[in-house]
Amino acid sequence: MKKRAGESRGMLFIRFDAWLKEMLEKLSPDIVVYERPHARGRAANEVLNGLLAYLTAACARKGVEFTDCPSTTLKKHATGRGNASKEDMMKACQEGLGIIPTDDNHADALWLLDWAESQF
Image (cartoon, rainbow, N blue to C red; front, top):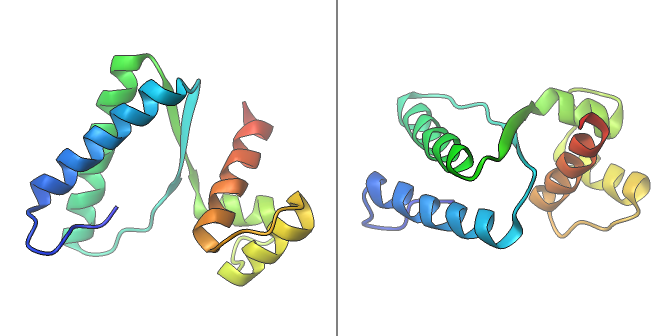
């Protein structure tokens, strides 16, 4: 989720909170799994911490567990190497899961699902 032109950081959090509530209501998941980001810099850390606060609160309200998966763990799960490239992750998705991802984000999401299913 990106901040729109002219939008305050607060509006980003409001949009994320609304989207998250809608997804939790619509999908009723048992668990929410996300890739742990590598935030660098003050602004990125502030946004990350804010989004995690909203995620924590929304999951607590709905009684949904949540956890993260470090990117190196996800890459190792998918390719056997913790330093795999985006291209490697997409290729592994096609070969290992039998799905042609639309982009690297789609591949990561599919691998997160696969990782979570192997863990929980």
